[in-house]
Length: 247
Ligand code: ZN
Image (tube, rainbow, N blue to C red; front, side, top):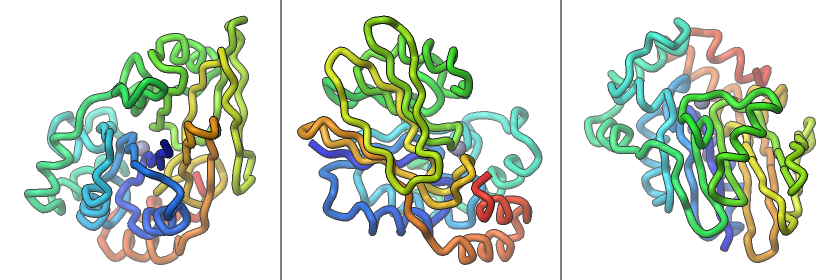
């Protein structure tokens, strides 16, 4: 079984299309880790594309919750709030209903994989420090736990000695992780539509359970088109600029 893992697409159609083209024929099913919308200028086109992919598991992110009216925007900074409220006004009734219906994580996918937006313990928690990663990996019910929310690609692994090791792609187009027996993994594929690890290219992951490999991938996309649409939509300009910096 091979999964394409998408996280934090954030209404960035150009980034999503680049990922789908790059990953074509390399997966059997899709997993979506949330934050399909928010920040970007194409919430309807992105939601429709994700719906058409028929993810076998699809959970909500904090931006999905606010855009769907399930949560208040009081924890958001002014830029995120403006974008979430614009998204709420812009989504078609059918797409708004889809976003509202996304399940809370974590979700068990199969015997090997679970997914969450923030952490297996709290869908809104940011796993930043090693101690957070260790806590999350300990709480994971499967040997492979995929998460998003921070928009930073990384792989944490923990073996029987309970020591966590973190690996990051460091600007490389691909990081291949060979899965070992007796090891648990906590993996963030990075963000499709708003990467924040200094690499502006769209990020995604492919898991091949048959070969025992996870690949963290990057693909370039026409950032200037996504930026132009954000500015033309009247969304806050910093949301356009940050795409070019990968921050
Ligand atoms: Zn996000």
